[in-house]
Length: 227
Image (cartoon, rainbow, N blue to C red):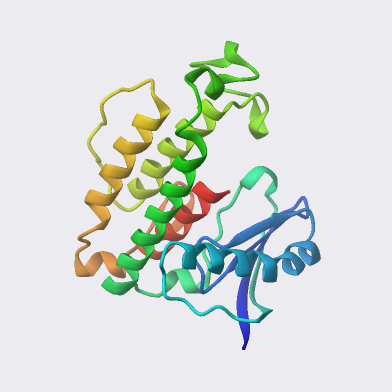
């Protein structure tokens, strides 16, 4: 069986390209050039499907994967270091409740994967490399980041994504533990997203200089933890 997968491309003024698998939220790849990103996507999609099947998702396992660019957005801004702002045509389509539940399951698989990587590490390992940076903002582009910084960043951005559609989210308890911050943030995110109102499924808004829908919020949540 051969699958032909549609790709959405986001290309920056620096030439960097992020390719997104339109039918597999969370499957993406960033490369210094468009051809490199497109060329790497069949393997990325195959790995993503295998990862989903590992967690019991009933998705087809194709023998071969082809790709086809269906949308291409070009920006003057640089896209290196994970920068992204695209609002694709697919982001405009309203979600179904079934799709929301699917996205949330995939988010849980992503969190389990992350925790499997870090839960067994001793506390000092989270700050290995540049312990003097604890409690401070590392340099641009990830320079000086430790595991501790990355985990806190994931937690903070997760709440930020959801706040683009839901303003005034309650402040969370302060915690110096990045794993606890991840748990607190995810609990709040799930509280908001598990029972969306019908109008939330199709609502769009402009915030922080970008257009947002629930589909885009969930796509970015899945993307960011895997980036």
